[in-house]
Image 1 (tube, rainbow, N blue to C red):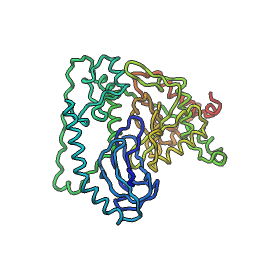
Image 2 (cartoon, rainbow, N blue to C red):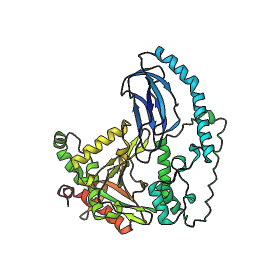
Image 3 (cartoon, helix red, strand yellow):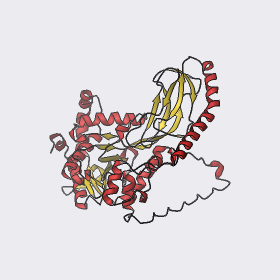
Image 4 (cartoon, rainbow, N blue to C red):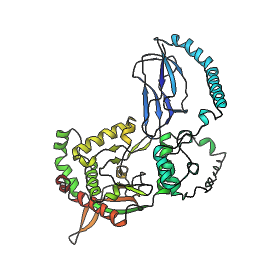
Length: 422
């Protein structure tokens, strides 16, 4: 009896994925739970394991194709060799086009009898959160372009429409911006170019960063912190810390803890805008930006405000390892309320990070560099780091942003405050 391989549930708001890579081919003998195929979603890359042992009889989708949740990826048959799989595979290939055609005709015929369009052409109703926001803003679903499956209008689509000024039900939809064709390369350069399809993750990164710039009123404020105290504390206790907790004492634990303290004092930086409402979060899920070969991902340290520095370091270590191995789950990526981006590990001295929407704040860490500073009227050399806070000025005032950054600076320059929760 054949066992079907189907696309698993990908997580909240994720309805489709792209076939990234098949690890096996038709005729291969596979073991249960052995990785078969890599799926790329707009959030993470996941591996689909074999639901049963046997022979991989058929692959129904190719690399690069987009599939929905529950879609058939292939089938596993009983046996232990390619010979046993050859005949079923050939039969499946011969019958698949006719079967697909028959199903499609049946669907179209049924829809025709009922006087409605085929199922794949019907537009899905708006998502519940989107429907509520449409009702509150007196917008019609026809005024909003849906980005979900089969044109479904999502909450983000409504917020984007509001940001663009859509208000009157009778308003005509805005004309799409003309697509500017790429200038052809010269005959000398064309053979030396390489065209590579963007992954789902990279497409989503590009779209979300541009949306953040277009939607939020972003502003960045800067400060600098003397890292002498943190570095001295780390040097003094790093060996004891690692021996007791089994994890190295880094800088991210101090920064995350400093951020959670500041968020409690300035809650607007931990809030988000939902239509005409402001949602204040009485918890701190801190996202930590991690660069991987496939792009930037932001796993989340949940309830970081309730953790010790040791617990934060352990969780960051776990998430970082999962990110580099491509094993982050969708749950690891969701629910962040504030983000920390450490460009200093790559040598960045200064930057203006872009918000991770719908969050209202992101802290940029940078390279620690010895610089001359004035302390007590004397010029001394200290290990200094520039800090950058990008924030949404629609919800966070300049005074609040500056105060938040000063609180982070104060905690880092006097790290005993973090231990004593001051």
